[in-house]
Length: 340
Image (cartoon, rainbow, N blue to C red):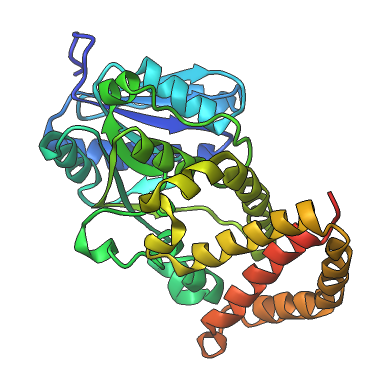
């Protein structure tokens, strides 16, 4: 039975777009855990009129614990949806979850305890994994499993984390602290990548601490390697935007320099984007040379992608550096493959 008061112990915000298939799994896991936590929880799906099935699922769902489930429609922008969810939330304690992420064991409890015990102005980010079946049987998913933490030396110490490693798909914070400091998600990021990192960086600049927590989710995304590489292209495009937005902060604030963040992969990308802008501004003719280089890399790129697809289920052919090389070439092709 739902309590009649209009305040909640916890608000869970889920930006949504067409992923009806995961809704029941998400609700069932949240409801199952809350049967023993006995919290008064609101779950807010922020949609963009993408699905009539979502309404039907919400109306027909009968929780056994104190869950209030609602849907709000707006236009299709992930950052805007998150911001709207924050503004509409009726609890000061907020968890941000994605629509293809299934809460794992003690997901609510770990976040809720963190929200209760942490000092002021703390943003927590949890653990993201793919299902064991996926990463045990697919070399591609072995490579992608926990990728956002792969370079983070402090991950297992449950300590401060880099703004490059937080993820909005598994995050918690206090509403009043965000509103008081005017910290929301940057709505300039309209496609994949960097909205998490911009939020984390903006948080640091406004006095927030970024902390790890062990709240787990299972990422049910079934992106193919082709779609993943498109995401890497989008990420690279957004990294150009991210760099331009924040270059002054990196130069003026020693604590924000990428070299101090314990994430070697991002350090290389940061240096590469810095080089791109230097060439673009000072020696633009070199971009045509680099475009030619990426053109000659294309046959090797396509052959490697085909090889990785064909050998995906054969663990003996799993080599981390091959996937890393494919990712790096995708970044190079995005930066230098066309002249802006």
